[in-house]
Length: 476
Image: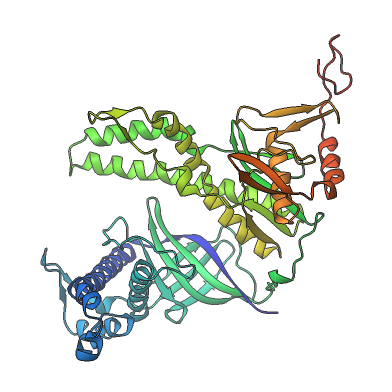
């Protein structure tokens, strides 16, 4: 079996001196990050335009490219910087780089290289990110310590005691869940949050095998379609005729958060009261984020416990769904109504649902269970009736459809999840637009109509009759 790299996050309880030292580590790493990023921006701004205009400069001025900042020559500056204190030019602050483990400083160089390479060339999928930003104390809160600099002194029932190179004393870590037996420690991420310090332990567990997800063949029995509902209290609809509830963590807490934010804005800048309210505001945001993350994990585990091997989810353009409407301006330069007031609430609901975080969590949980998450194109899946080539749900206000022919009450969201499953299995009809009309060119609906009808009949609710009793499923 091939060992798997797992992450376990625990609460740390450093003493006062250790907190001061960890804060100093964060300050030094923040300065080192900004310094390297500034060197790269300076070189790029001074030479980028010349390189575009004169591509042959590489042959004429090779020393220019020898001094181009990269991971290796920037990391090579560390022995020189450690000989004396590094002075921050705008504040005169003196920083001692020898206080921080060398591998931690090298990891900061990797982070700069990764951020700048995504900005220039894009990631593995070719998607370029925005321009890297210089970090302040609030945005730089995590440092990495390699396993060679860490020694686990002892593990008790609920506590772990470890020592870190260049950090005096032992650090207590609260084990809210036990570590696996026979693990191999790889590294630790130390994070400063609003309510304290946390350690994310990366370890290898040789008892957890790695599944080859490419060997999983999706079938009608071992797959599950998931539709993002975002309607009332529903969060997801599955192709097994089930609906999972939402949590709406931000909407439940926005009143309390707004009250704290308003009080902080009214307090004098730099005062003790404002700092205390800023910390309280950060903790409110932390509660919202944690409840959202907890909901994502619990929902993902509930889905994985269905023993399905393939989960088909929508490939949503979340950035486009939460984008502001384009402004409309008349001939006189006045702004016209563009529907943004009505869309603002929908944007808030999309952000509060955090489907991007949930799909990432589901992918992680499913992979540990030997399953796979497949993203499919959701075009027309919410409109077409799953067991008949007919467009029924053409408007978002149509939440249910009663089929007199089959005597079925079809739910829009469950029907959409079944269609998503059919798209993943390659059984969804081919739909094209011709002369402004939607036309179904090829179809495979007949091959799955019996299975879809069986799902729809499985959880039909009896419809009350006109006499007040419970009778057949015919409409009243």
